[in-house]
Image 1 (tube, rainbow, N blue to C red):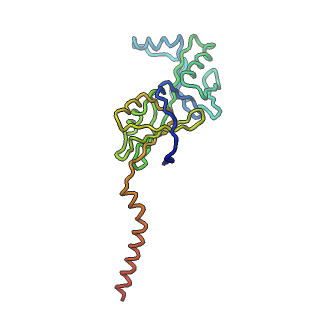
Image 2 (tube, helix red, strand yellow; image 1 turned 90 degrees about the vertical axis):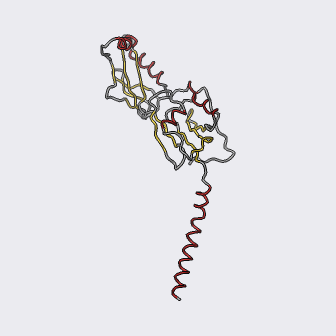
Image 3 (tube, rainbow, N blue to C red; image 1 turned 180 degrees about the vertical axis):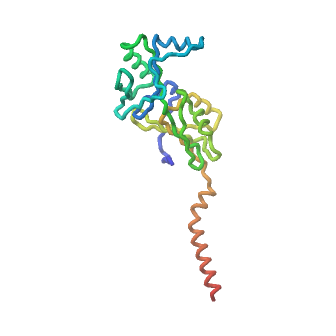
Length: 229
């Protein structure tokens, strides 16, 4: 999978990607909570045993972004959220609800943020959910079970769509210098593919297997005719 020509030019990896933020896309599933008084009750909850009263809570209700980029929120109705970051959606909702409630404080979570990881060897793949908004590359690999024995740590490819363009980054985790990638944040929709160390013996055996089978068949047929004589 994902083979490339020797002269393939990989995209430049931006190491300050901690500033990158996931943007809402169609079919995303959102969880939404809304509080009054700039969320003061949330702070009160940390110092008392009283329960928090929310004026709007997703609870068991999830808000799905439709194919046009809209989702239906209580009171304010259909709202366009496609292409916005989580923080931008929260700011937008606080503005829209300010006409109905006093100093609203919104909290939005994307429930279906996930990445796909092939950790090398045998084509094993894992779909990893990103519960945390700041999961870095090394953490993501750990969540997928780490690198397999046959993984080629010097050739880790990360596929990411940026402004509608598919970018491919090449990452090397074979040395201690690879720790710098602990600052590289993975985003929902990323694909991480780790090349496998080529097994010369296995590849050679696969190449000669058809010929071995033909020779074996000829020898068996020859043996049968020899016995019949």
